[in-house]
Length: 348
Image (tube, rainbow, N blue to C red; front, top):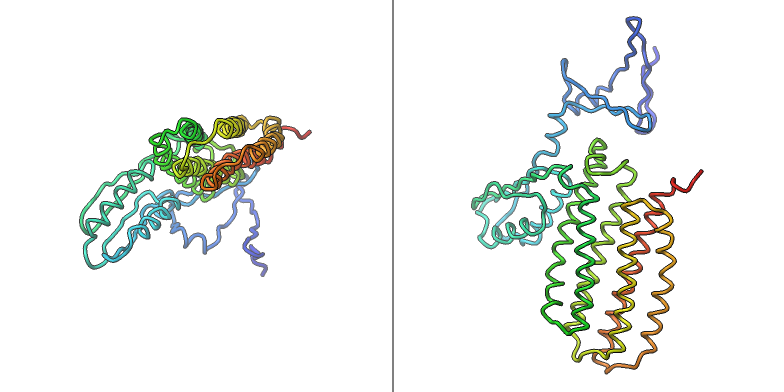
């Protein structure tokens, strides 16, 4: 007797049967039934995807349970940074509740303070719902439609642009406090980076949320993840500019400042244009941004020809110029991703 299904790598082929004069039926693999705790009378949902695929979703209670709660066991001697890395991993994995539990001795006051401070600063939509010496419970309350990927990326773009402009202004005006503010603002970009990464990973694991987070299809998730990281790295280079400004022993000459400012204006213009091309899925705009990198290279050569600085400041200026240039290069990287995401718009 021939089996109704044939194993082929990780796929199973099932034979469609016809019964009752109008009903087509197909059997489900026993392993899938057991894994998802499906029983007689259970309700299973079907969803037809845009590409013609049919998705079978197990009972909602089972799906939710898988990502309902993560438990992290902690000892009194554990380093807090190690604990927060575990919390971030659980957050990015999509768990809606994270329990940090003391194994033997209660959590130290230092551990509790630093964990709570990290959660409040870095994890968007996460609240501390229980705080005792033996356990800390974190609940992610933000739902997908409340803050879409595009909305979060727009916010990251505004903050990053402001950081870059303020860093260069701090260099121009020798404003130490402004440079310090740029460094502190970096946490804002990092927290949106974590949030978007969580959303994209959830969409990959569960395609039904793709549209809820504001994307057209799941295949775009990888591109958006890379864009998110590029924005975060652009913000890091704004921090580098601020830190290198603080390290300068003397104020730069007007010529050096003019060169840096000119490069900066073009770099940040490219960055904003690249992000706008992403939001609009504009292939031609993205293409033009990539061509602009030549201007940055030319401006960098002009800076090299500028009068030399004292040795103690020359290295810091070189690092500042490099960070400005990297901002333009990241803009080109974003534009290249937009080309890949929007290529269908130019094909016949």
